[in-house]
View 1 (cartoon, rainbow, N blue to C red):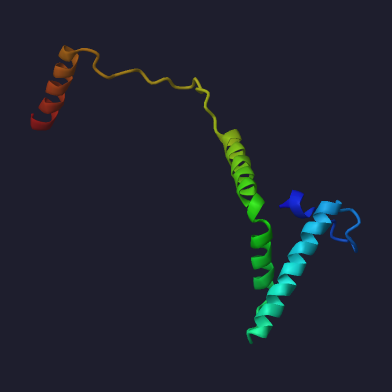
View 2: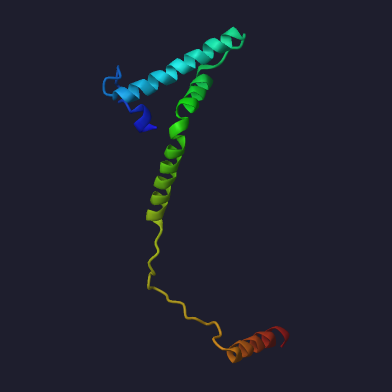
Length: 118
């Protein structure tokens, strides 16, 4: 969700480096979290801040969640794809030993049966 919320350096003391949209997204989550906590208190229930923050985040990011998940999967697939080697190495080449005709199949089967049953 870097595009949605923006990223800040660890030593940042304010949100000045964020875009107005990213600031708005962060404030929207905070406001929704505050409303959830206030509503829960009126019902006599105490919510944990991390639980409420997660619920607010899920609610606010609902419209873009599918896109974010899809992009995450794409990057993982591309990353894994780079690790695959699909070119033949050329060190050892297997010879095709499968019988090509019916007679070859029958003779190969007879040989294997003779090995098993003597």
